[in-house]
Image 1: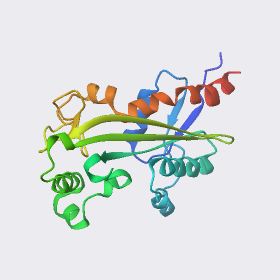
Image 2 (image 1 turned 30 degrees about the vertical axis):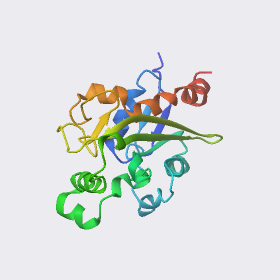
Image 3 (image 1 turned 90 degrees about the vertical axis):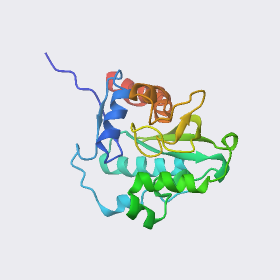
Image 4 (image 1 turned 60 degrees about the vertical axis):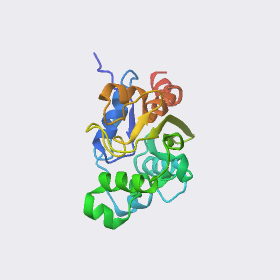
Length: 216
C-alpha cells in the first residue's frame, strides 16, 4: 500500500518557532510545512534585504516571492508588528528595530524596545494609549499571489507586567482584559493573536491552491 504524502508548503522564515507555530495552527490541513533549512536552502546575505518596504503587506510578499523562486514550492510568509495610536501608528514596520542602537546594546533588543516605547509614551494618559498588533500573511505559487491580514486591539500599559511571551508582550493589554500578553497563558495568547487570525484566513487559499490539485 502506498503511503500518502502530504504536499509541501514552504514557510519563508529561518525562525524554527514560527515554522512550528504555523504548522500547528494549520495542522488539520493535509500539508507539510517546511522551513528553508528543511529544503537545504542555504542562508545568503540577500535575505537581509527582503523587508525594505514601508508596509507589512509588501514586506511579506517580498519574502513569499523570493523563497518561492528559490524553492518552486507554494510559499507562506508573514510580516507583523505593533502600531500605537498616539505615535501615529509607530513603530509599525520598525517594530523590531524601534529602539536606538545604543539602547539595544545596553539593554538587549526586547527590553530596549519596551523602554523606548514607554519613553515615547511618557505622560500620555491611559485613554490615549490605544494600540493594535497587525499580522499580514502573503502566499505565493507559480500562478497566484494573495495577502491576508489579522489584527488584535489593545492598549499599552504604563509598566511591563508578566514574564510570558516576548517582544512587547509585557506592555500589550488585550482589549476587554486587564492582563498584558506577558501575564496571559500561552493558549489564550495563541487563540487571540493577530497571527492566529491571519493564518486562519489563509485556509481557503491553501485548500484551493495546494490541497485540491494534489488530491485531484
